[in-house]
Amino acid sequence: MFYIEMLCMAASVCAAAAPRSEIVVSNPSAVDRVDEMVEADASLFPDTAFAIVDSDGNEVPYQITGDRKLIFQASVKADTSACYRIVCRIPAVADTVCYGRVFPERLDDLAWENDRSAYRAYGPALQRTGERAFGYDVWTKSVSAPILEQRYHDHIVNGISFHADHGNGMDVYAVGPTLGGGTSALCTASDSIVYPYCWESVEILDNGPLRFKARLVYPPAVVNGASVVETRVITLDKGSWLNKTEVSYSNMPSDVHPIAGIVIHSSNPSGYTIMPQCNVLSYVDLTQNPDGDNGQIYIGIVAPDTDMRYMAMPAGQSGEAIGHAVAEFKAPAFTYYWGSGWSKGGMPSVEHWNRVLAEFSDNLAKPLEVEVR
Image 1 (cartoon, rainbow, N blue to C red):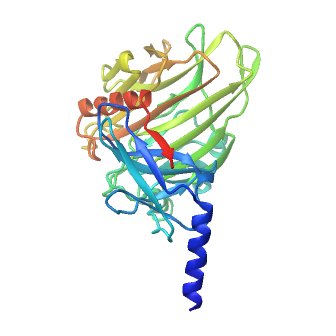
Image 2: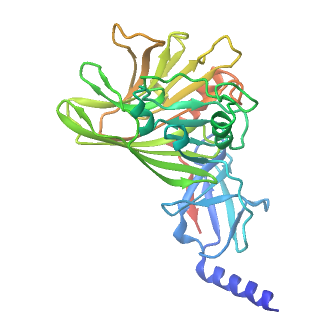
């Protein structure tokens, strides 16, 4: 009897707190949108337990983010709408797909992942060693389940190198003193890149199950006499090939401009593609060991309203890195997208990768529309 009374009380509270009972997602584009993350204001939903179900009655996992957004993946046919209902009940526990943390046991790596790929940004402990590693590192994945904790544990504790594929991917991407897999930086009028070093502080804002989000603040850099601080907010969602990255520079001099770039290696000097008509840069990286059956890593940037070009490394610089494919920004605050796929992890070809990037760019211009009723 008591249990029935509690259920009735919860139902009445849910009904009182949530006059809105459905979420309508509309697709204004001429292509189907499949498992695309959408957002709504979380304050419009009940404080008590609720689930989201689609038109077939299937429960859809969701997350309430740190900035009070309700997010879930929606699938909507071209030029139509899809309705998702709010049901007052305890939702099923969503599998954690997006995850990350700082790994002090590995020189303060900030590493994060979703079901597509994993990434890391180097931290202050690495900088103190004197190693010059500036850009984002790319870790390939061939499974959708989280792999970071196991890879670090096996590498550090068990001596099982994460530079070899043990069945779920590996770290076989070369970064060094470059922009790596899509990092932002400042560029002078003489085309000199002011490389960011390792992050100074990190705050993890969301940590799964469907979204990882972190704010990275970099130490002040003296650029043409000005002390400039760079802040990045990186967001990676379930199902996305790309990280959304919001960058801002404080005290940026007028005679420099921001860029974001992908390093070009001598093993594949002509493997980059610049598609300014759809705001896309891409590159086929042959990995640190092209003859080791490691597949190919596809790197990409989507950066609306930018100029795009190739920048060669300065004369006399040694090493495998010979240049960067870059997008150039005009303002000290901007948003762009970067990420990766792997030929042994669900990305069959560079042609397919370039289509993914172009479609992502098109979808940015025609975002799904969300209405809470």
